[in-house]
Image (cartoon, rainbow, N blue to C red):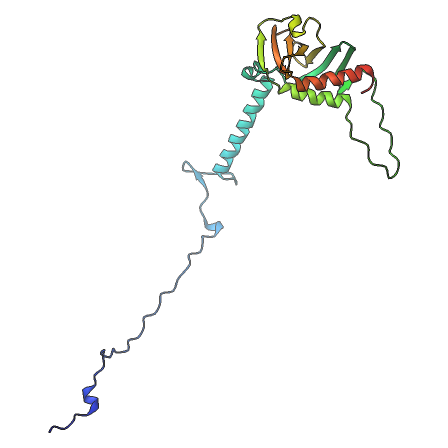
Length: 242
């Protein structure tokens, strides 16, 4: 019978013991500070020092912006309306280029002129002043003078396009109501020849007027809404109710 060996001699560690090694020092992160401005090199362009405080890129963008603005100003001043667009529009110039408006209807005539301040004024009777409301009374409805309304209508006419060309001649046909037009409108620009529009009757759909352009020598269809407003304003001024 053998004797049992001591317990310590039978148990061995699962993994060998590792000697304790000293840890290496962690490297320190060093941030690279930017070079002080006074120590930086001066800007150079094509190998030569740049004399201005503004960067060359910013200066180039500024010059390009000025060039585009100048080109736009030149082209807008050269043409009141681009020729290609003028062929599609009822009138070939902008509203602020119109110096005078002469309107003749079956009730009479009236005129509007642009004054030194650039505002339209009428040669008709001045509008009746709005009475001062009583204290506590509801405010009266806002009304605009005929000159203000004409100015707005001219803006609409300046952007109005021809719906359709009916004839390549200045027609006076009774079929279109152009034998006795209900309104004749003469627009005089600051520069250039006047333009006269004779407004006849509505088309069968009642969406547009037959219009004769005297100087263009054609007959066209024009949307009724701006012309309806102009006919109404002219009638009010002529009758002294506007």
